[in-house]
Image (cartoon, rainbow, N blue to C red; front, side, top):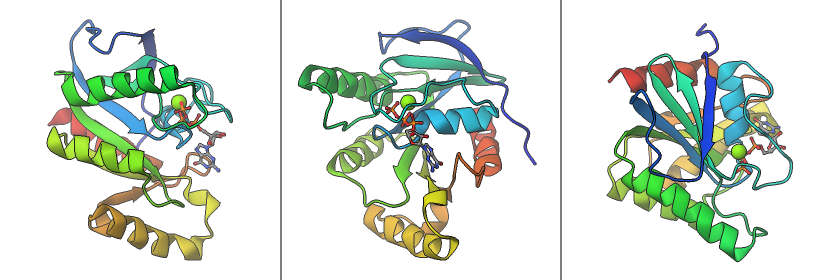
Length: 194
Ligand code: GTP
Ligand code: MG
């Protein structure tokens, strides 16, 4: 068992270029609004209220930075929240694109998709950005507890087909039950080691 990651909140920054001190390798959590980024961060840390979670999408609005032993984990606002104002949506999207596309200190991306749903247009746009920028990416399926155990395998194969990826490359998780969280901790620590 990999123990919880000791994550410490550093701060929230509106500027996607904000420089962290001391500099370190950064991993970024990205995904649609409400996909479970902040919940996953809390599960990784084994803490319930480190990152703000809400039933109302759009809770995370800034670049939120957490210190890890060997670098940083960045929690970003979700993309594609239909009910956000147009201005907010544009601003969130720009923040995410600038961090994912242009931030030099980003070592890799942890990209979250809901296990239950095919990738949205916004998801496919993110996949294109990740490929174009050649970002090392770990694909994580969230909310596996929402499917019956017997349904999960088929869902993973479906998501893999839609993404054009081998099913084995998708990490199945649940922040609620802890499924896959130890594996994800290991991948994250390994990702920062490289
Ligand atoms: P934004 O910050 O708005 O982009 O959302 P987010 O991606 O950070 O999602 P968040 O972690 O705030 O979770 C959104 C909702 O999904 C909350 O109601 C969570 O309780 C719920 N949720 C997150 N992860 C899981 C999970 O693994 N299982 C279940 N059942 N619910 C989850
Ligand atoms: Mg969030």
